Image (cartoon, rainbow, N blue to C red; front, side, top):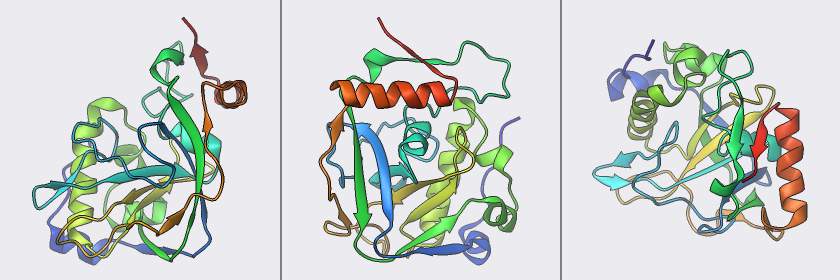
Length: 223
């Protein structure tokens, strides 16, 4: 069953719960080499759970991450793989699709204000984890509508956080980049890439991906 569409911006603004993530919070990433460690994805055709979205006709840049590498990979590389409770097998991703990706980390330079999509946050919004987090690709049109509506309804927010779909014990995050006319969103200098990125193409990078795949019972399918 597809999730329902979001309510009016006024109702969302009244219902949404905000968290403050303090300066110095570390965010782990798995992302294409096209973007630097602290750089948002500005592509207008991303097909992810909460992006691409827009504000007043302009694409909102986004940056996905998580508490650790496993969560970061869960919300990007493995985001459309069926969850372990699904009967759809095998659970695998093709390596060739991600050979130009890399691991990186950033640290927040200022306090971030994020909309909660954990159980309490979802209940406040009168929706559920099953609707916004657990669904596969067929639900993405609607989950993107929710992300866009929340960005519009809470213009001072810097992003969303939720408990990861594949790694439910850890927090995943999607940060909004700056866009004209919107108060919130990360700007240049709000995130510090304090360590070098590690490409998947290097043995250490690929080994890390394989280890996480093993932990999640997902096969990295080599050509």
